[in-house]
Image 1 (cartoon, helix red, strand yellow):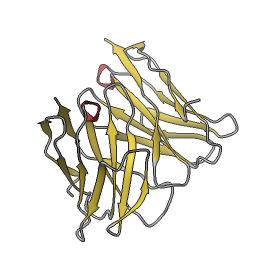
Image 2: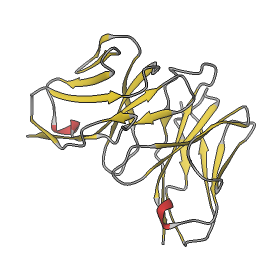
Image 3: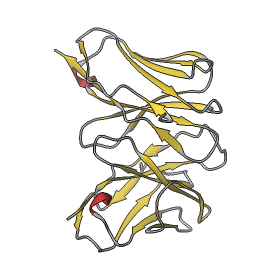
Length: 110
Length: 115
């Protein structure tokens, strides 16, 4: 079992819809969770981080964490074509390294 | 406020050669981590440097080595290059005072092609 799993996609949503990206992790000791966006040919940029169970909202983005189910998700409301990218989930289990999933490719259709 | 800077941005090397990649962390940050991202994969942790010492290492062979300087900048060295070393090499900077929860910020990366 991979440490951090994401559906590779592509996930296609129409412009203006809600995109839902999911991530599961295997280490129950994981403490902090991050979502990065990566455009093709570019480096990952941080979108959000979440530490506690529940929801955290930042503009059009909402991160959701359920530690009991070992599940973290990212919702993007009012999706725009500029949101088309690969979204990487990263988990930190209290060590110095971050473990990344392989990413989900999102396509927002105009 | 300078972000994370990396050099060179692109380079091509031949199998068996050696390469050095450089990184300057974000202003105010003292910790540098290096990640390798192969095509279609997520970044893989190589190692982290703090106070000029390697603090943790991922599952990479000894051909991968690094260094951190007193000004917090860092170098990644890869010896005896293999075709499989072709990847985007990402430097990530953070504050090293806490073990977990510190957000890491990536530079633009160095694209290495081994032929």
